Length: 308
Image (cartoon, rainbow, N blue to C red; front, side, top):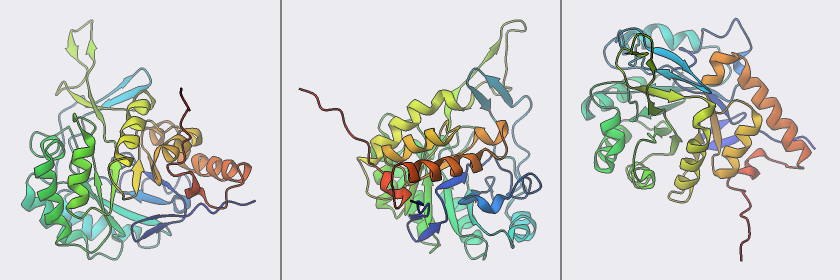
C-alpha cells in the first residue's frame, strides 16, 4: 500500500510533513543547486526583521557532542530586501514557503507580519517569539503567556495567512504559553526552538561563543523536544510542528506519535544537506510497511504502557 504523505496545517496543505527549520536553510535558494528542494513539504525562510541585522559578534557557532551551539543573532537582509529580492527568487519553487518573522516589540511584529503577508510567495507565517539570541524580544516574549497572547493577537489582526507560532522550551510550563498563543489566534504551533547552552575552551578559559550563552540544537536535545511536543499536544487542539534533534525518519515518526502533524529538520541540514529527502523516503516506506493509508494516522498514536 502506498501511503498518502500529505498533511494539513490549518488551511495549509503540505505534500509531505517534512519542512526545513528557520535559520538552517538560508532563504530557500542556497540549496537548490544541491538537490530538488521542491520535494520538501515546505521551506521556512531565515528569520526576517524590519531592519537589516548584522547579527552577533564572532565566534557565534560551536560544535558540541551530539549537537551545536549557535548565536547568530537573527542576521538578515531586512524586510525591504527580503520582499524585493529573496521572496521573488522563490517564485517558481513548487513547494510551500513559510516566512519566519521576528520583532523587538509588539508593533514591529505587527508591522513585519502586515508587510510580508500579502506577497504571493508567503504561504504561511511562522512567528518567532522564542529566539534566545537577541537582547530584546525573543526569550521574553515566549516565556510570558500574557505577552505571548498580545503579540500573537496583534499579528493575527493583520494577516489571514496561516499563522504558526514558534515556542521556546525555556519555560516552566509550556502548556500555558501554548494555550495563550492558541487563544490569541494561532492556527498551529511549532516547537521547540533551541535550548540555552554554552561551552568553554579550557585552554584559553574563554567561552566558545562570544556572547557566552547560545542556542543549543542537534540530536542531544531530541528527548526534551519530544517531551514538550507531547505535553503541548495534551494542552491544545491545533496542529503541532515538531522539531529538535530530528536526524532521520525514525525521529520524525517519534514526533508524530507524540502529537506532531509535521516536522522540521534543522541541524540535519548542516550534516547532510539533502537529509530531509531521506526523512521523506523513510516515512513513505514506514507508512507502507505499517499499512497506513495516510501518514497523519500516526499523529498522537503513541500506545501507552498498561500498568497495574
